Length: 247
Image (cartoon, one colour):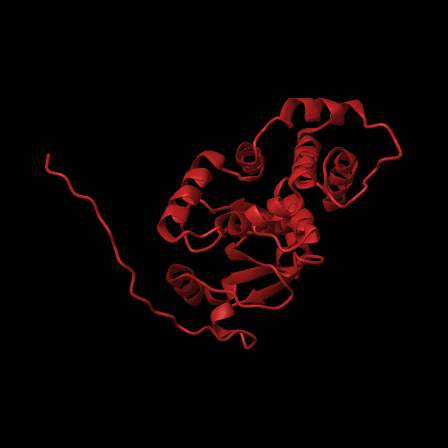
């Protein structure tokens, strides 16, 4: 069994064992949203995660019967024996470790954000962002301007966009956004907006929508000047805290 299917099996066991509690801690409104979003993040089919959850359901006390009419495969039994003793907190951390792209850093960021504002939205935002980026990698060539071209991941460069699509005259800049539902709002940071303003028709927003049902995408070229978008500047005062020491 490949690594992605092993991850999907573990997530399925986690969703089966902790049911609504698991959805709540990860920030998802439904199992379908969890399957779609996590599936993209770990490169597994959403249906695989659902099937694994159903296979584990007869073992755990939830309202679903699951696949109770057949013996459990040995790989599932082995996983139960290995992980079923974990507490909810430990199992949640394990699941985040296999979903988050940079768990060593992301788990620290999540902890700091929770301590600052008691927010539980970090997991969903991060997983949705990762899922949208993977969706883009899988589907970018469906955009006519990108067809046949190579991409470069720039998410860690802090350059105002997530990917470069390389062409003979240079590159297109692509900022990937994820949206839970089919309709909603999107935002650009000041750096993203200024970069889009400067690059104009060489800047694209690739918006992945509707994780809650069935993801699809929409593309906006030259978004600052696009007729479909009307960005409004939003300024707010942020308290800046620094720590100083004499040396």
